[in-house]
Image 1 (tube, rainbow, N blue to C red):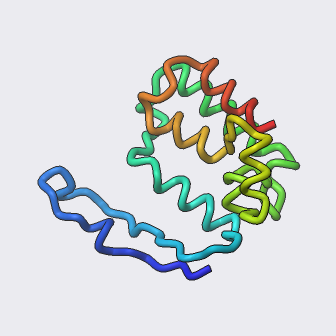
Image 2 (tube, helix red, strand yellow):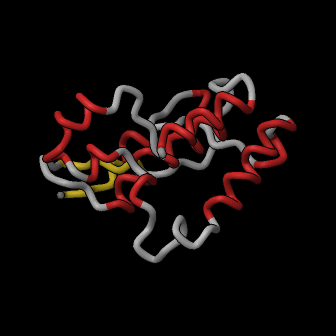
Length: 136
């Protein structure tokens, strides 16, 4: 895949963005599989906000601490990274159709974490836990 930084997206000028640090967006041009680290970066950038731990509500902080501990587990933190860190069809486009037919509510760990840290998506801890459980 061809991966490039798209500075024009990140530096969009608006009064809202003035004085804020911008991060270059990844633009991926591919019909084939995407490397895991690129897929994770792409998922993370799809969330417009990533709150710091001190900004989280109590239940969100507890979910975030659980998630960090979970990611330290040997099979989730291996050097090859865990296969469910990114959407399966993004990593293996050759099975996209079959995957969509079998898996009605797809979820990956990076998306669940992004939804938690963005805020306003989960209303309670059980919704986050349910999304993480969908991965398995």
